[in-house]
Amino acid sequence: MPEEVTKKRICKRCLLFQVPDMAELAKVIRERIDLLPEDEKAPEQVMQDRLSLCKMCDHLNDGTCGLCGCYVELRAAKRHMHCPGVPKKW
Ligand code: SF4
Image (tube, rainbow, N blue to C red; front, side, top):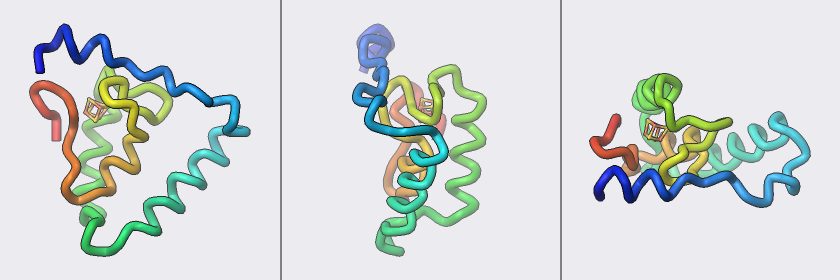
């Protein structure tokens, strides 16, 4: 996908008002990760390596990816997911 197209897909995380605070949101994301079937989970080190790249990325926005709108911790926890960037960072 051309870069100018991906730049138009920035997600501002609508419905944020439904989440009381970031700690509550983090808890929900952790629960979602814990509920993933083991064969769908990325190995812990793979997830951490992915998140290290997200932490250096300009598209990271309060735990979400500005390109796809995903919560990056949940995306990185899934074995078959990848970075939506062009080129992919992981
Ligand atoms: S998933 Fe890719 S584009 Fe999104 S924040 Fe992480 S490194 Fe950046």
